[in-house]
Image (cartoon, rainbow, N blue to C red; front, side, top):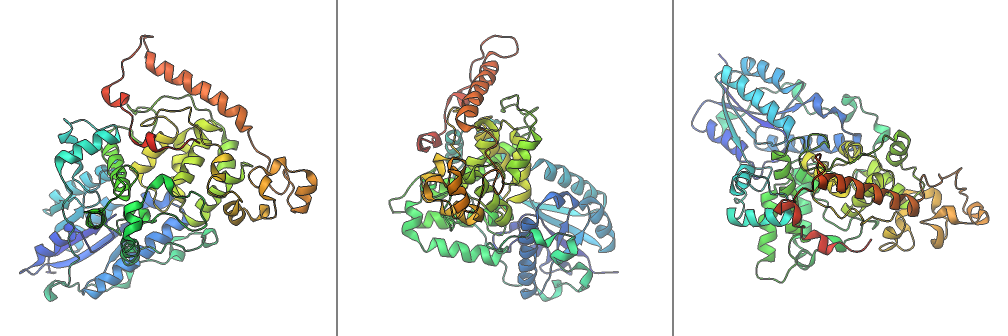
Length: 516
């Protein structure tokens, strides 16, 4: 008879610090003869992701495996569907307990319910803990009268009633000798990227190394800049700086390499007693935005879709595959937009205001393509693509939900000039335009042919012509948005519909939005 096993199932929480489910697994092994086996399952559901995200994940798994080995354990990586995998492991490994972090996404909730059912059938005890979010989201939902807070202001008022998030837990220092794993087979090793069948030629520069070690090191770098932390205001950071003007901790939060609670309490320790910026624009405010969207995503049906989504405007977007293709492949003919999309594909990260610019351009601003298509592209390419945040932000930028000032459109020309007058960002990501004079770098189609020839880049040949005329199409799209809004206000019966209190209340962020 093999020694009974406790499995800790790593999913998003790819870290040892502040991992209460892992600590619960370790607690279960104390004074017993249980063996701890930390598991990560390479779920086929994750295969739609791009190569940069795969690299970040594999790096994170390798870092986690190394950390576990220092404690006398290891990571068991298994390819397959979770339900089929656990059905086999429960029998093969003589599993008695299973621990994992709570996940509130629709796919995850359905998956976890199935696993719990299988565990019950196999007499396996299941222990789950909250640690991917600051709060137990059910407490937020219940504190708001069992309804979802639909504005950031309302959300902050609810969390104020709930109180501060729980403290973070330190990482375990060791695993009891009797509980260390005896299974050392290489078949459970973390795979190499080559083993996954990826086209490694598509990989961009490895600017953001995955893993808990890198996450904590990056956190320390920024927490030492106390004055910078206190003065941080997201709208004042640059969307097109050559180096990131923000922390770029979002990928580490998304994969759970960094605990949001640790980040939250470190920020509080710096801000306490000092003059500082406040939510929604402060660093603390950014963590609360994350929590706001997680709460919305957990309780609003069809949150990542327009149809069947009770908070989403039903806007008659058009099918424009050529426009979507040009946007995705950075061939719109607008250098600022194309430079952003090039950075996204090659590096896997772009500034939040850059995301705003390309999202507005794809949807209500210029191309009139559904936000659902943009959401899928971001899901594949962004290192920090997070289901709830991705859907929420795309609804916001398309003025489908949360933000309703559809007449505020980002100019694909003027907006970038604010922080990068000479177009250095464009020249970095679109080298074919690097010889263009400053006066034409944002609008190369306006350059005389002699200038185009001198720059060795003919518009329409070496770089595409603009696919739309922004000044004209943006006004036409505003008119379409107005009609969609009026239709929503009237309702299907033609009568005016009263706005709910939450719909009528704008979020504070609109006060901080600069004129585009």
